[in-house]
Image (cartoon, rainbow, N blue to C red):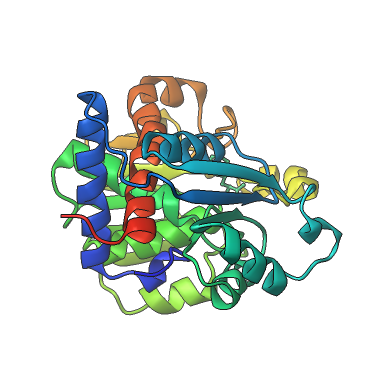
Length: 304
Ligand code: CP
Ligand code: NVA
């Protein structure tokens, strides 16, 4: 594994190896066992969109690993004034040991990796959010001990989260049911990957998707960059709220997961959010541990 650009690029074994290392690093952190595995290394973090979890967990994670993280807002970089990503990649490769980037187009992340000579980590694009899904898989595995055969139902917008969850969960042998209105389906590349897999269901019926699910997952109806569509989207997704009634279709005790930020009263009710707050904030915490594992894998080579 040279980069983390999208989960389509990873094998099941690579995902398991990241999750195992994440569990180990979490255990060490909880037990005050220092792990300065990236001492002397520098990670550049390019942000073209807002972030709370991704920025803080990468920055703190790099610190805990003994390295340094630089926050690089695109407003301040020359990239914001038109310097091509191909040149930015080659310059930053001379200074840094790795780059994390959050941006709009997946192509920009792929170009950064193609032109640079250091590992690139996708911290969210319109197409994918692989770091989030690694943390999600870690959280689900913590609860159920194994992933194989579990059913995840994704309810709402067929966005970057729907794309990455579909790929990540199917690769791990899970069943995935995605319920979106027509016109808001996951990306065609993801549908091509999933098509023909008996573990995959695409429907416009949230209850059908939620039936027998072990994990119910949702995300905002208007992602970053879609602010102008917000009102239209609230109308389009009206029947796609994760609420108490929908949860009745899932397995008793099913987990509720959300990458956050959550918009109560839209994709999830206040009541469901608060009832599942413990596992939602475990999920947010696991961003730190999962990303530390990704950084160790990419910036220092394999670790037993
Ligand atoms: N879930 C997530 O990526 O959160 P941020 O946008 O706050 O980084
Ligand atoms: N789909 C959301 C995820 C935020 C973490 C977005 O792209 O804005």
